[in-house]
Length: 273
Image 1 (spheres, one colour):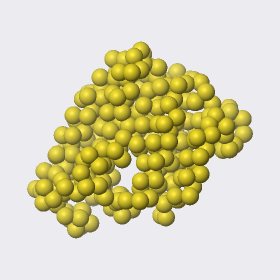
Image 2: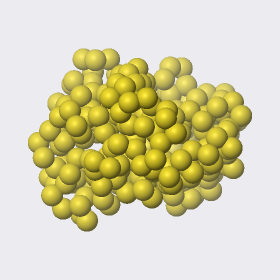
Image 3: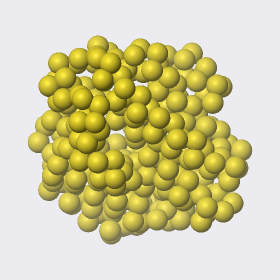
Image 4: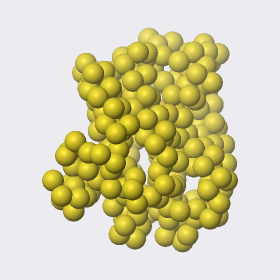
């Protein structure tokens, strides 16, 4: 497979799967857009393996070895495009390995005792992706940008966790910290039943406050980016902030339907950020 064909395929994957991120990615100039679509498609492949009915540890471990061998490629579209991206941009190899390691954590556990425990998982599956993408954006101060990109990734993952409670329960996972469930008086039986109580709303408001603080800190990244890269990140963040607002407006009922924004809602959310 040629590099051109590989980028065309990861572009199709991104347009098909990245219902929120595709909005921001489309704002980037061509070379950056292609590299970020390669990163997205790689992250999507890792996530799909982690969320398979029987988590594919062996496949994830092979993928980890493939990442260690980059820029060599096994010829698949995702790895061919990713191999080209890591040559063109200073994408830190450890961030790609962190992402696979985060997926491997899903093979080992489905509960996290504290936010500190969960934060390490989120750092691997989302904070690392933020750092990798920021290497493509080309910040004017990379040393300052990396921790901000990681924090922004944590914010988006926290919102993902809130949105996907029901879906994750179906996979046998609870990403809400166990000590916070106990603190607010919410049981896993409540999650299984989709019970919307005062205790549930208080627990989720606590999660929302954490997401908002992380988002506020992470958005300082915008000042370090060129205009189009900043618009891309602003689009991601605005849409996720819109999802958070929608969950709050619904009283944190994430069980009856999965929170999502219409096209008009996404435009409104980005404009309001």
